[in-house]
Image 1 (cartoon, rainbow, N blue to C red):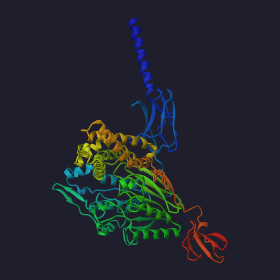
Image 2: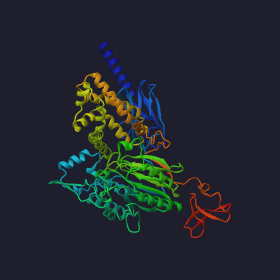
Image 3: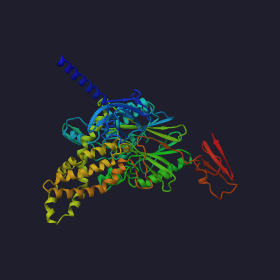
Image 4: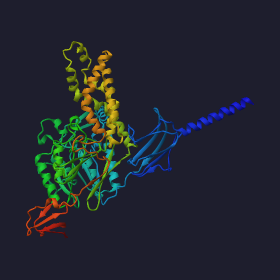
Length: 637
């Protein structure tokens, strides 16, 4: 009897323990839903928690959690997540120490893509024609696709999937600001043009411009059973011929000195497509200059002329160019010299002063938005840079315009699968991760001189002769040690930047502390023959040198603040924003001359731009007329 009683007590105790443990692992939504709209508060009910537990949130494939979290102070309760979550899949974790005790999945639904006019924006599609690879096991081909952060192997498959997406959404227009091909191969251009023609046949026009990979490339290759061969590329004239139906046809208003053009794809909306490519036939000092962008003075003058002409007609003006027009984080051009077109910030201010409200860019393969003001700070311009379709995160943007073209809403959406990739986002992320050692290697090559200069200050000091000798002369060996020391932190920075709206994760200070610790690890790895005090001293020197360069970059980048510490400082939503396309409130008072005589007539657009001194022969539209001290509106039909 006693034995049975003890057994019953033990079983009851076990069941009670299990029930408490199960309760501790419970997370649920307060209303039982698992899909919410952007702007809604998500209520998370937790049970069985302990004081000191945390509820943290991860979005999609993010390596870092959101800054928004709950520090639990009672066993059960409700965590109302503020309405800051953007579209995507979320994982709420109840964390105790380093252990996840419970998990809850929910999603924020994609925003609708409704508008009077809808434009789809893609960038850096980097299509590589399947005809360029007749031997997929070619060793050089395998090395190339393995070291590249882009999914070049699947670029054509991804392009066709995007074309299917475009057909399904049937936007009014498609824009692609450059890098249409892997490396300017004729076959790849023909594949892109064929896909765009299929869209056009279904009533969906596309407009393109070249990027740094598209014309006269020296890197075009074909891979067959005999090895690697140079692939046929195209010239400037061939580019215009291949894409004659996509911006370069007869009757288009072209810049005489470049592949730039201007058009009005939507009534009242003018697009200036700007060619900033640098190719051998235009005259460059080095082949490496092709990576960089440049808008020549002749092209700039042409752009300004076309923008002014559009404004005089009271039309909205947008632009697209391949390279970014401005820095998106402090020090960007110091680390990534080719990312911004030459004198981009200054040219962007000129664009703003002449009424260009936004410019669509690519090249950096990250979804990021920055903003600048004109010199007089009366006008501003957005640089809306988009991710590559074949790199993480593969996405497109929808530009949604109202009937009056007064606003442009930007909505970003991912493509999640293709016929060959069941999880495009995961595959793209894995490819970036696999290519990180190669990326670090390139950085080591680029900044090897900085390390050597740092160590030269100890040259001639006998005690440090053997220290300098510890640094591997072979860059690949040094890169491997650098990746071992800094790789994990570098991965967090790369993915957080790729995912955009970095400020939502609030990781800048954490990353900076990790970098300091990484400096210690690097010195322990490189100078493993030295004593502890020497390694600590060297780590301090490395920290001072690295942090002096990295701290302003990391703070600007991971707080998503452009031009930090300047009058142009701004934080702009990288994925979902609305751009005001109007030209001021009324615009009229600021442009009226004080000494106008009563007999004079002046005609202005609604934006305040003077277009005539007569009401005769005006184009269709609404105007403000001032004659002496009297002002009235007229409509020309």
